[in-house]
Length: 345
Image 1 (cartoon, rainbow, N blue to C red):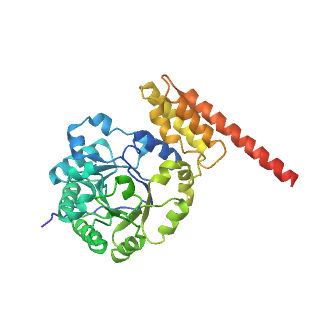
Image 2: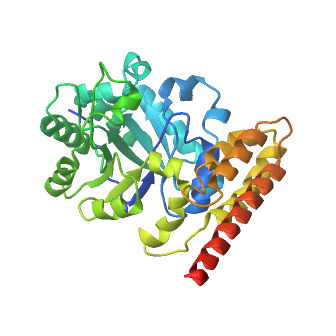
Image 3: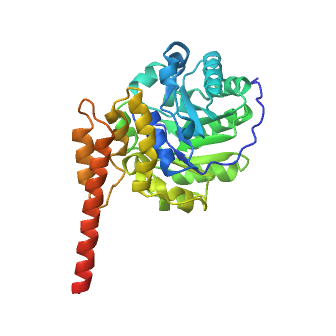
């Protein structure tokens, strides 16, 4: 019999930014926080082995500005999950999330990620151990199933067992994962999305907070999903066009201010300056900014300057300033051209 963990009082976080390996590092998360004060941020998945035996100072470091921020773990051993969760809580993370959705070969060989959809009892045991070890909320991020599983059975069984163990929030990527024959990239695009199944999960388990993930490309789409579930998790859209997050607090939460890309750069600038003084390379931070002006005049010049100049030895804030001046000038030219065209008409 699984030990019950204490219930957690929570308020649904209606917008989350997906944990993405090699993408959502601490610099990326700070940039996202400069755009939205309300979105919940997630770390890249860290294995329990890395947390227990690796360089914790490097792996678990985050800036105070990132709150609320969740630590995502990968692992299967309940005792190790509990120990890693305890460390994460001590480091100041606001949530401990277990990855039951990553389909990479490396993850499968380590018996964590999406392959755990086949072992829901073990997942529930791990969640019970995490919940008993920490006071912060313990959550699960999963797929709807893997390989030949029937999603209507696999998803509901995993959720129900974890709910019995005390979990109250589930982030569901609304696709299966095919563990053989598809690359991790293909697993994000090829298996069909089944949003109605996730909606049904919320209808039939109204006591649980359900956050939907997968293929959501805009705030308009996010708002449409919120008619059916408690939250939305954005992934690649938030990374490739982060400027959309500047509208999130107003459009999704109905409060706060809209943040322009220019304002976000100004806010991020102070963080970049601090990190440069610590020896962090500029490109490690500016690589997350490349899509900030996506779809507007000057975006190409912005990307080119950051990409070419940002990697040079000794590159500093002057590179950001130069890129910002270029995009600002091109936007001004585009606006002037539009005005003249309107006058001519």
